[in-house]
Image 1 (spheres, one colour):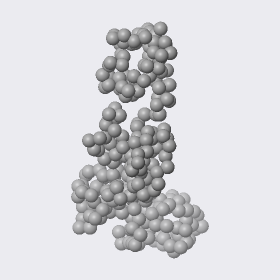
Image 2 (tube, helix red, strand yellow):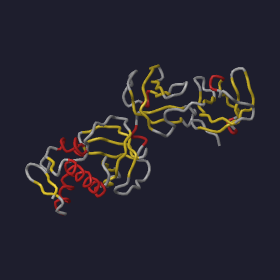
Image 3 (cartoon, one colour):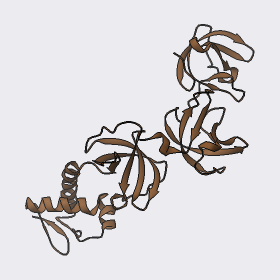
Image 4 (tube, one colour):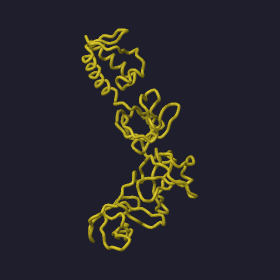
Length: 276
């Protein structure tokens, strides 16, 4: 079944001065405007198109790809304000409407906003919302500790950063576990550290502990060899210095140093660490 807000492979069935018409099965025939037509085409040819409603609520097809599909989150720029709401640029001839009721705060032209793209069930119109919380945590949480997940950063609190996990759930990255600049709307990879009683998810940006420690051991030993067997860094070094040198938290660094000391691969002094 062909649906509004989705891509489909449709057959060209006839030509008119304004473009060609495509057989959209249950939706009838849909116009692919002449400016959108491929360079080479013919009656009976199949084209890959996205279907939506134009500014006059007529079904229309485009070969262009929107920056995000309905059901997905995206960071988009506000390009216009009207009496019905704000409009975002999203890669199609018709900008994407954010009705006033779907704006958590009034939007401003020139600013970027994280939104979820929706299809209005009654009208079939495509729109977006900044009311993110309404559209996450609707499905049961089924993650395992250490699982890699896709993140979209969407909020900052005194505790840390709120993230959308795999497009479905709320996750938290605690402030003391963040050692890089993060911007809202940014897409990152993360790892599940805990599922809380309330169903929320704790996330870190580094790989699971054992893998991190194993990789970091090799990295530290490689650095020691390259530096002639001594490195002026130890578990008393400032956290920002450790992150700048190795890209990990001080806690992870201390765990790794402890493992190397236990294996008697290195010794540690107030001046630094040394290969045995």
